[in-house]
Image 1: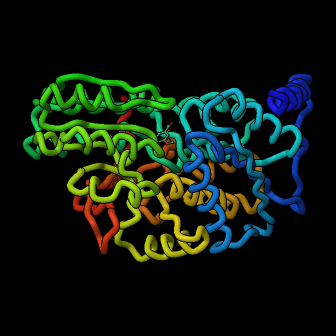
Image 2: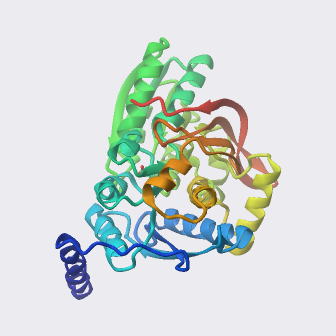
Length: 393
Ligand code: VNL
């Protein structure tokens, strides 16, 4: 209570200073380029923050902390992952008090949406490294996304199901915007291709109980259960799927890769075998770039496996560095965003680019099967849709 009150007073102070028009001072070439990194480092989505924070460390180790003659300074803030107004207030403080040049992070959609108007008002590039609702990039011309979108990752799953004798599906999603994006995309693609949706189930996003939903799905006897839950919640879903015997009842599990998040695969173990998911990143992606990344990440973190959110953070840093090279160290927001548009590079996930029209990421979406490799569960890619843009909803 006390801490909260204190925090609120502080934040109100920051907001007030901002409101009376305290214009952030321009930074000079000799100053460091400051990146305000806002992540959920605590709370139910802390794994997302930890993954991105670690990826930034791996990036700095590989590429150094100076680019285009300017030192890079990262200022990390923990927003707790659940309160959009806290994320926005932290962004405001970073801009007004710390004079940051670039905003980055944004673990969940509501947190990115609340901060978008600030990016526009202050002309600060806002790099969305994790959140995946389609509409986010439309909320500010200063947003550039290096993560993914739910429609982008869902559509290929619906297409795969249609081609693989899955005729009836029950969907289960988290009841907030990325879940609704995923549900809408799956419904549309699957029914347009001749499939039938038996029910659309939605579980609460905060401390969900999946048991009644998984049981309901079982009772409806679909060919498959399609699942989207945000990173961190997959273990609970997999436990219910296993305990309630859906696989034995002949009900397949399919979904976006969030449910078989690499971060959780060691805990999910054998339950993941045979589960088909579509996603833009697997720690098992067989490229030399990715092998080096996984090794560096595991080393710096004492054995943590990198997940897709880490890659959004790693590529976000890469994009910032390449843009600064193009502007020769100029941190003007409009110039940086302009430099980011159309940028192409070889990510650890495969080839990616920033769509110059939408500022969203274009990437391969892979179809993967859960398999045991030397005693550990991995998502093994066996098919892909190349250079896939967000199809929207
Ligand atoms: C979101 C989407 C967050 C997918 C996730 O993990 C995720 C979001 C925290 O847009 O809120 O896996």
